[in-house]
Image 1 (cartoon, helix red, strand yellow):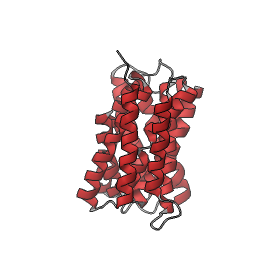
Image 2 (cartoon, helix red, strand yellow):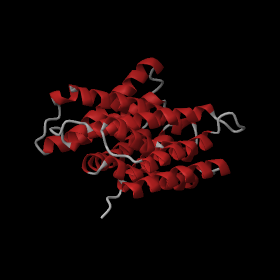
Image 3 (spheres, rainbow, N blue to C red):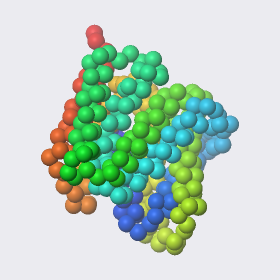
Image 4 (cartoon, one colour):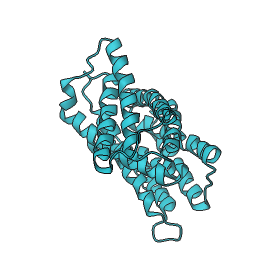
Length: 276
């Protein structure tokens, strides 16, 4: 999970760089196709079917819908708002997943972890600061992206065992590509991307494949409520890259909200450990 979070932070940084001159439809299409090509090659190399009828099963269709929502809205969030702020809001994903695992997957979640979920969501409100000076409505895009990714992770847990991690990657990046093409049909194609921009999208796809595969392994192998709190390491990587590459800075409320969200996740992680 930690390796996946580091990869996703680097992926976001690369796509934000590409997004300075390219519309979102081009970014998602190029990124999705590059990741799709890599996953399809790896699956074919291992003798796995690249196209599987299981992609049309109910859990996978639900997963694909959440994937599209998460990708589109979170990409809009980090393109239009600071990377560190969008990533800080995304850190609520594990808390939503813990609640969802209890409600939909019948995992046991005690009142202490439910309390951690509520406290963590309060931290998100501090970051958003609705009704206060400094509130940016665009930050709500990250909330929608977070909800999409939480649904995707829960649906991943319920995915048919017959599908390998590589096949799930093929399906996931195909959804990203289709989302980008849908946006392009609405936005239009202003110009062809340059060689440098194509290189950025390809690099993001390669990093995204590695991170996506690591995330899928984590979600299908470990208990959801125990594995997901390690998502908080993404915030550390995102803040570092935001400051280093984009010259971002965090205000006190964002720092406080992030600390509350991360603290809630660590507490939930400790409560998820089996007792001897």
